[in-house]
Amino acid sequence: MKQAVHFGAGNIGRGFIGALFSESGYHVTFVDIADKIINQLNEQKSYQVKLATDKQETTTINHVSGLNNLTQENEVIETITNASYLTTAIGPNILPRIAPLIARGISERVYQTDEKLYVIACENQIGATDILKQHILDNLDEDTKERLAGRVQFFNSAVDRIVPIQKDNESLDVLVEPYYEWVVEAKEHIPAVEGMTIVSELAPFIERKLFTVNTGHAVIAYLGYLNGKSTIDKTLADEAIEKQVEATLKETGNYLVKQYSLDGEDHLNYIRKIVERFKNPYLNDGVTRVGRAPIRKLGPEDRLVRPATEAQKAGLPFTNLAKAIAAALLFDYQEDEEAVKLQAMIEKNGIAKVLQEVCNLAEDSEITQEVVKQYDLLK
Image (cartoon, rainbow, N blue to C red; front, side, top):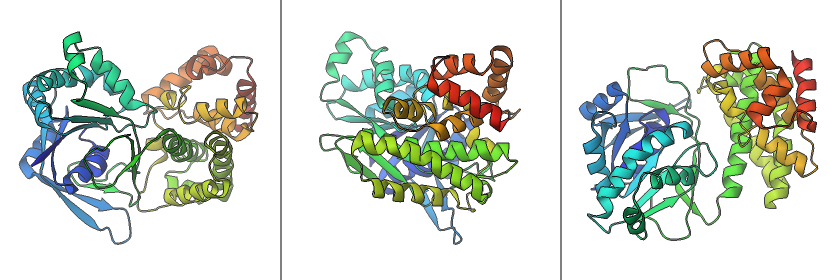
């Protein structure tokens, strides 16, 4: 049976990428440090993926097992030597931590077989596979690096599926939205996987997704939190917030249409489709879950700041994006470590300094001035 090894046995791994490999006839070995999940995978050897619809259609995912990368390093290495695909859905910040073990697996593999290994990091990050590749290369000797050619190939990808916090944390079963998109940039043939779309240029797809889905999701969460809403769908039931979200996504859309020569009407329809996805009440997705890790989400290359800086460079409006950044700065949810840290930074240094430190925005920039103005209005 064909083999795939997937780092990250969380809800995205099980409910999206791992599920697609299983449905494509692969045995999927999930690699994670969560002993409980790993043990359940090895005992049950299957789980259910449920769609967040009124009918709650389910698919049984078979041919799965698990390994703990902290206690079963040799087994992980052996699995990498036998796999056709190696994928991740573990969070961009964790990629440097798993790279040394992946490098060891690749080192063993390239001296044992000429069979190709396809590596794809399925993260919400532009160029995530390039980032993972560099961390892997940093852990390889020169001889092994030379042997990668023709044996190990790396492909960037864009992934899109909403997987909310699950009600039953004791179960392997995962509730997911019906919609998904997995786009992989490849200029040559790679083995088919159910649900994977191959494109020759990824940038338009990944930026369209990040600056519509991720930006939209974050804006709803931060505005919802400020307005005392509990979930994403309940936030969008507020007409004023829905209009604000659409206005923000039109600003990111202006940049995307100009940058990638997209059809304006098509992109407007895409925005509307995304907003409708967010209204799904069966997801019951909490604003505090979606808004978590605000420091990461305010990064210079991330969903709020990057489209604002690109819009400003292109001479396009960015007022609504500035308001979204301001709303993120007001996310003071006490159970989120980054939110607490961010509030402490603001208290100590003020907004302009935090925007410089976290967002790489100059203190005298037009965007900073607009964010400070919007912050004061929202506060």
